[in-house]
Image (cartoon, rainbow, N blue to C red; front, side, top):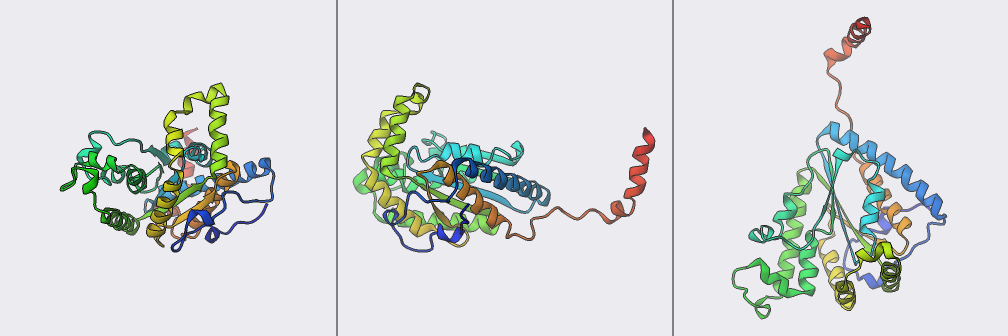
Length: 293
């Protein structure tokens, strides 16, 4: 299998999605990629065990992408070998009335992972500079001071939110949260084929909604706003990675490998040292238990 370099997928400055491929060749069969994913995710689960014992770091994985880009299945495959108590998945849908009584980052802040654990945001705080920007009328639900109509929304609000998001991520990073942000880069034709499969296969009909087609008509807007948001918020402490997503197995492997390679670079993620007194008397403790039999 072709080796991957995380830096090849990392965004370090201004860019546009149109210049990035939606498909890449790992020079491996689907079955070989599937086996590779199993090996990588098994190693990740062991790191999470050490993180839990170490109790110093947490990991936040943010997944964004157009409809049908494979976020749900990626979560299922990449994190399936984790201890169930070690990873929590949050799917952020339309804000509730309670969410809207707070600022837009509140519901994401309270969902952050505890030390020693992973949290996966299936869609994330970035919806507030993406969906809300494509549909600015949604911003009115936040009941912001001085904004009572779409016409009153200042263009500067999006730049301000980029800065707020950067500050949010810088803060949690400085306090021990390791951040990964992945955009699953799906081609428009591949999305069309996946939507058709939802319609053609009865067992997948439930996944389809007419709004899928409505949002598809806004494809170019989403591509532009994603490009801008990613360019403005990819930082060393919270980098964005653009993942070719036309092939689901390939996308899953690349995401898992990027996370693994980064976490392996933390030399201080290790089990705590055993108490000296326990180590000196470990033979005696073993003998006591053996004698009980």
